[in-house]
Length: 182
Length: 348
Image (cartoon, rainbow over all chains, first blue to last red; front, side):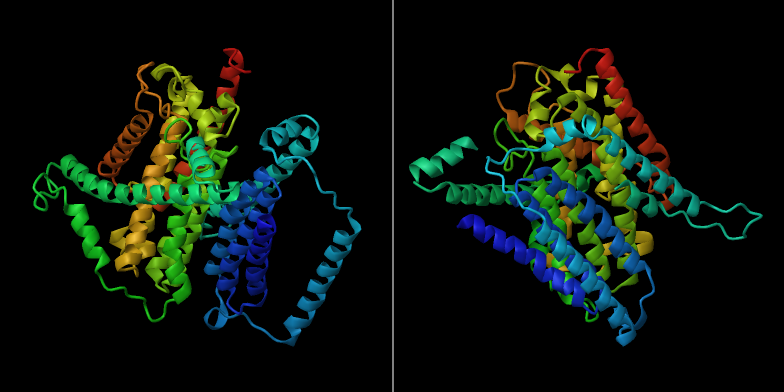
């Protein structure tokens, strides 16, 4: 009973701000609402016993991705007092895209056989670590290689031009590397 | 903690859920009171330490002995001040931002092991959890800067966020060698692994851990936005940074969070590198919590010493130090500590 109540509260914490993210006219408000949604998702992970995934969710999405989203939004020129341009030319492609994604997700969710585990909830960290360096060592190393390549790419894109190429030195932007690192 | 659960479930006859909630409320209240006391004591301490380092007295009048009541008087004054919200500010976010900063800090306090068995949240991945929830502080600072609708505040917030996001990496990397040695992220396990006197503390286990400790210390100063890395609130160029527009009680929340974070990073240093609740001499562990707090206060003193001694660095120097010096050095520490462990046979 209490467990159901906790689930409902977490689901509301995820969904209500998510609606605000989608429909808010102020893009910074939308970004900050995303904070509650991401925390709600972390709460759902913890509720399902995936403690490592829950903390990683907070670390990566709240501490890394969301900070970068807000950073980008605040540093970008926003027309008309923080309100994005809106009209039918924006609405129709967005609606088509959103419905497409929804259909895909719905199809996947209904197609998967969801098995509920019966056993007691146990800490998962040690097992995840062991699996990373045994059964899944190749995907794990491959992902780190991809991230390294992306990081080097970002460093090349933002590097200071040589004097003969341009007069103004480009400003270093360490945030870009951070995105890759997190 | 077990004793508390046993008391509420057996003596008071609560079911498990009610006992959990009661214990959680009690622990949160204790932590909040300790936090508020910290802010009061450290404000006075900071002014006295600053005075001492600059050959002057600091506050001397309020109270009788060395102005001890100055911080209390300041607190009472700040509670009675007018609460001003700028007309053009984004009101709900302006109000919520200081709470978010404080929340990030308070959540992290939950995983601090004060004494054997006395930890509010005994989590399997305690250390990772602490670093994850402190990222809420960054968001709180961004929110404060943006909602104030003030260019100084926004500059301060942007600097603060860039600095804290960057220095989080060496901060985390510096603690990884310790996790390698312990084989656990649980905060109590990390402390228990350092039993047996000062030479068993992780800071003196091997040279790489010694370097990692100082890297952690430097990164923790930047993480708390204190001098010489206090660019987010440089008074000479940004008025007061992200909390320029805050007054009265709401400003007090930022102030409280600053000292709560200062003590938090000091306690993490004590927990991870300086033996936690163990006393330096083996066998003298009759007051573990006192030992833990004394070490924490010494780390705070070290932090204040640095703040009032070194001049402020520039933004580009700050980023240079983080990305080109500290991250490579901490990466070398991680690999080096691993090799040292294998060579010395400490790998289990």
